Amino acid sequence: MDSPSRTLVHALIASQLRIDETSVADAQRLEELGLDPLGVVQVVVRLESLDPGDGDFPVAMLERARTVGDLVELVDLWSQPTIRHPIERTSAGSSSPA
Image (cartoon, rainbow, N blue to C red):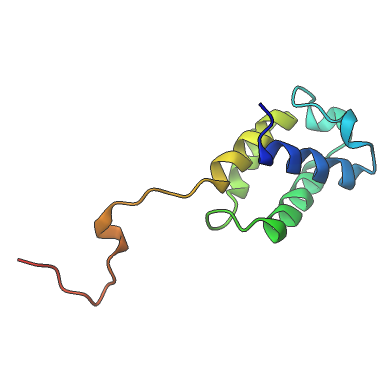
């Protein structure tokens, strides 16, 4: 199944490398495509401007991304809303029932 993240990541990589989007596949290694670490960060910066996701993108996790599919998985995780415990949603100034 094609996820919206996959389509977007493939399109951004293709745009960054100035290649046809259909030539980007999940199994491809980023370096084999010609996408160096700076290029990956540039893709993520463009991604953040298009899709704010759930907070800041976990840039530190990019070092684990070896393939296009790895990057798609990171984007999928980042774009999912975080489920927080109800206590975490209370404001610091509010009082809780005793």
